[in-house]
Amino acid sequence: MFEGWLEFSLFGLASFRLTRLLVFDKITSFIRKPFLHEYEETEPDGTTATYVDVKGKGLRAWIGELLSCYWCTGIWSSGFLYIAWILWPIGIEVLISILGIAGLAAIIETIVTKLID
Image (cartoon, rainbow, N blue to C red):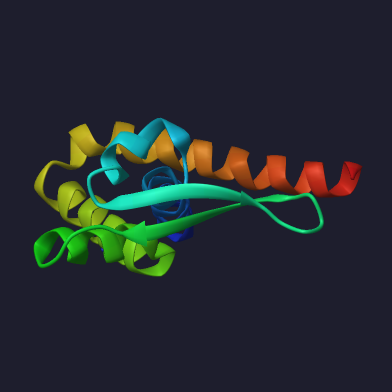
């Protein structure tokens, strides 16, 4: 189990960042592309919104549903990180640390951006 609040927090931030990476980031759109059709539309107020349609049936549709659901992907991301940590603790610590730091940076950036706007 976790040794303390710091380790637990790092896992939480890493899971947050991995989930956002899989569900929203453009750099991983190639992972989503076989399962989701992503398209943008301009709203009446001038903002751009991204929408997704799930492709296929069966396993393909199931994976598409998973990747279109932030909460679902979050559970699987957390499970992956935790199981990887149990099986290969020294190796996965690097990934968890990088994702955790990136997750915290993303949260700070969001707060700073909101304060400036």
